[in-house]
Image (cartoon, rainbow, N blue to C red):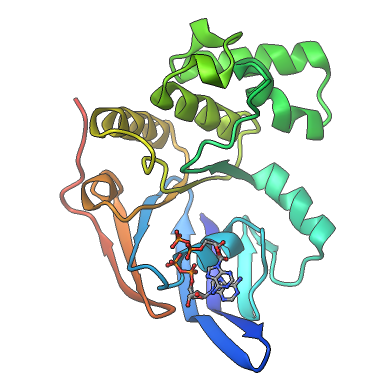
Length: 233
Ligand code: ADP
Ligand code: ADP
């Protein structure tokens, strides 16, 4: 079943008299359980497309359906609501609250979802344990390694059972060994049936995905099944 469906979406930025067509016409279908990597040179439209897929922005033209809901016409409030429910974000810079423990960071999306404190803590600890951080629940970000911080961020992304995990350069701030550990975790999430959409400019990282979409000049240049998926033993 289709989770992400875009039909001829375009995004035009107006700056004074100048206009930039960041996306010209992008039609993509991503089914539940797929693991997709987006690649492409700087300026090719990846961030713009991720902002739309992540319901942070809407297209200028065309249609975007997320889990069967038409996002293209949504108001700011509706976008915020669907984001909280459907999307788990993972960023290059982790974006954790520095004064809060791992558990509190992970529990944050559950506050917006309206869960009570004990329920939030229980669920946060359970998800932390699932990413291998059961013994780090009361540590703060500055007491953790880069890889551990990213795993906290991944736990936060998972805590609401979102329809998609949207990861923007998830290994961009990590050394090679730690990057592979994070890809190992993504492999596990994929095996568990999660839908993963990742942006990366690193070819060896993209090779962990089962489908690779290359963008150029606001268009999809190539969209291929990855026959040589890297798997960690
Ligand atoms: P990336 O590192 O993914 O290539 P960019 O550095 O191109 O991302 O963009 C970072 C952010 O700045 C994006 O969210 C984008 O919306 C915004 N941005 C990019 N180019 C411009 C621009 N010319 N004017 C204003 N904002 C921009
Ligand atoms: P990528 O992520 O692949 O680097 P972007 O989506 O950031 O590409 O940018 C695509 C094009 O749109 C670039 O020419 C960029 O300068 C422009 N752009 C992106 N965001 C904005 C913005 N907020 N305002 C104006 N131009 C933008």
